View (spheres, rainbow, N blue to C red):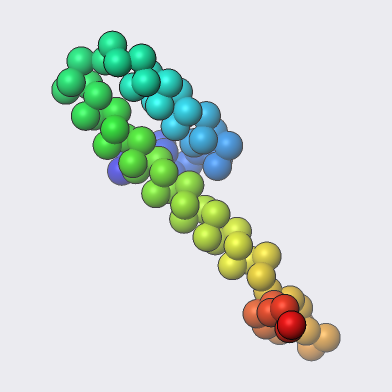
Length: 76
């Protein structure tokens, strides 16, 4: 995984991923380049997935009155 990919924002990574997908969808990318682009896209997707999981974990916590955090759960 490239260092620069980790430093990009979620939105920048999504745009980069969309660009790669559009290039691959044309069918005009040579096979070796297509494989490299596919691998790059997979790495970007993993980065985005991890950022979403981290955001979800942060959002799903509620601060107690004493300042501690607890998991947010919906009771049915």
